[in-house]
Length: 138
Ligand SMILES: [Zn+2]
Ligand SMILES: [Zn+2]
Image (tube, rainbow, N blue to C red):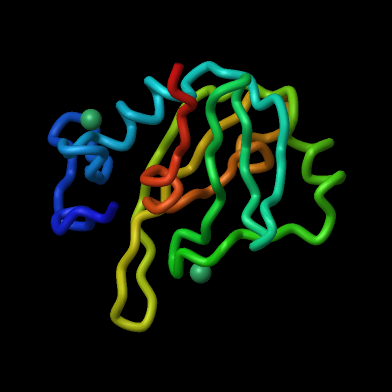
């Protein structure tokens, strides 16, 4: 669920945007680190709306949405996408803001392990992806 303050609050320690998860506002950096930090990307799937899900182990799924408009981030070639990303570990996160046509939005980049230059193993996500991160309950 979107919180009223989702685009306004920022973590004083990390300067990452805060989002509402359940009843609380949490720092996206701390939340992502807790949920997928250092985990291996094991599988990528796509639902019937075309939304890509990054799967981390058997119980964590991160959906990919465009940071600016929240539309599903699509790929024309799921197999190539899997080949490129599966097996890598999450190494860290950074954030910045983008601005266009009077609107501003937050981008969070996930750094993955690998030997390529850093920009070639980075995936940008938006706040919506963090809000819709799915964790299997047991
Ligand atoms: Zn923080
Ligand atoms: Zn967009």
